[in-house]
Image (cartoon, rainbow, N blue to C red):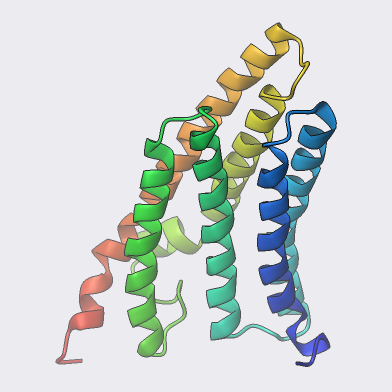
Length: 202
């Protein structure tokens, strides 16, 4: 494999392993482990922007790249919700919603790929494009998600003063709800516009 020509895809896949290392540290009940978990979480999510930058800068945009990017997003966000629920920090409803939404949207988008569309290119309405593909929606969702993950980890860091932990946990939970609502809302156009993918007359 030509590393230079596949740098964006390598970054997309690598961030999955960094996220796994981050959540693994959450089961080591020490302050240092949690600090590193926060650092690695920040790196994993910043790499989501890096792969897109590399793809644009070096002309590496492709259907495979789009699929790997979305795959990375799904795995990374799912493992954080699942681990947080396992640790009792959040309700199990969060990973259930996340995983269900991923199965629904990604199966629909896989059909779009067979018809020569990109995962986001299947959106044809102005509102669908705004919700799914606009920079504002993508950025707002990403910021809410990353902030929720990092603040929740920080809130449960061992030896953190109780008043800081409680305040941080409340902020983290609010951001988590914002993120999961965005998760659902951004799936609506995919479902609403999928009918054309099964229209045999076209």
